[in-house]
Image (cartoon, one colour):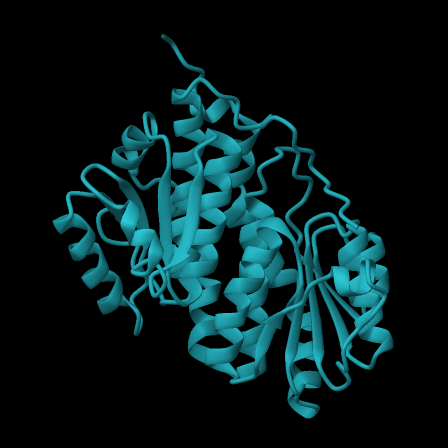
Amino acid sequence: MTHAAPETTRMFAEAAESADVVARQLAANAAIVGALAERLRAAPPRGVLTFARGSSDHAATFAKYVIETRVQVLTTSAAPSIASVYGGMPDVSGMLALAISQSGQSPDILAGLTAARSAGALAVALVNADDSPLADAADVAVPLRAGAEQSIAATKSYLAALAAILHLVAEWSGDRVLLAELKAAPDLLRAAWRCDWSPLVDCLAGVRSLFVIGRGPGFGVAQEAALKLKETCRIPAEAFSAAEVRHGPMALVGPGFPLLLFRQDDETAAGIDELAADLAARGAAVFVAGRDLPVPPAHPLIEPLLQIMALYRAANAAALVRGLDPDRPPHLTKVTETL
């Protein structure tokens, strides 16, 4: 059986643009992000409430760990239906309401951010479509600048959201080291795109299900990887925190069971290594991004970006090996207008 070349898909072309997107975004958003960071320092929010769905919600998971570890502000994910379905909003006065969206058109995200702003929160939108209703509804719109994204599977817009989160938090916290490392991220992303993850592609060619595991900022990337494997490869991939998989999910792990672990070189690394060794001892097929699956060495908060960059290429290739079109997953549309 012959398969289309991986580089012929829209998903491949768009994901490959991610390094240029991040470089463009960092340069163009310097004034916007700098001013927003100054505003947050002058009037520190008492908490952060995120509004997002799908890949953007996985970016919000990443944001939770980055914000809580770097600026020590409690960050939680909102249920958009509280505003869009039930017509309510808790007391969010003095909080930062952070909406993340590729299209800026989802009614529930728009309703949530609008209600939070009316209830006294500072409304900020990280949005790719800067002429969208969501951008108009925000006090501050931070453009993701990913450009048009046509493949159903979001890639460069997700990476753009992660970069925007890091940019904001680095400025907010005054972390000059992270800012300097972030400026080097485009070259690292280009290198990550060239990394060989063919052992994972070979495994994905025939699997029926797998677990995807991360911890800390890597958990948001694990969630995104699991979603992409569902969308592009039709693999029932389930994401877990490394702290949770030892509970009920471990009962499913046995000889040959595939697991993809995301590992960044921070305080969670030893726990990921211990878990990987335990899983391997059970005979599981274990792949560790950042160890068995290579990416360039980088700041621990940038490593997840490099790992998901490489995963996108692997997922695209695996979909084609499985005889699927990663650009056209069934029953899905580019803009999901959830109420």
